Image 1: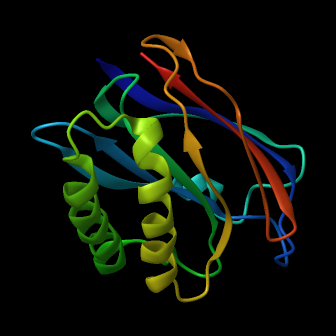
Image 2: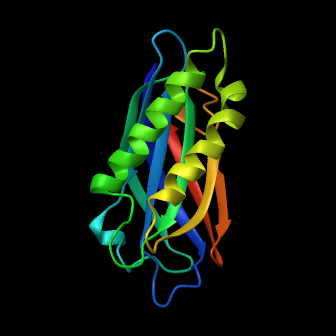
Length: 172
């Protein structure tokens, strides 16, 4: 088991919001089995606020979760903040509680893999986020495949709200 780290991301094209982007990430991490466990984290840095423009590469190196392995389900949402992040504080707790309940129901399926759980859990993650948004935009939501216990993971491409981002996570 290893640590999951948001390594870096590139803004290929800014979203259609006025001015530079203010991206942040909402990450669901679920460990299937008995006992199953799940959490939702928000990753945001103040220096990203209204500072991310087309072509920018940002090296984040932000720890996301520990105890991650190839059967951990990781769902990543890339959000574009309008004023303040919508998924923070009470709203983040709402999403976390929603997803813990969902994963408790689905994650306890005997022998279910992350790949099998993904199509069951992803729609609930989308619903939980949308139910707690005020004015932020969802650039995209994707499953991050944990393909190795050490090193770089496959690049995730997000397209939405007029923008495009490439995001890289790392296992350490």
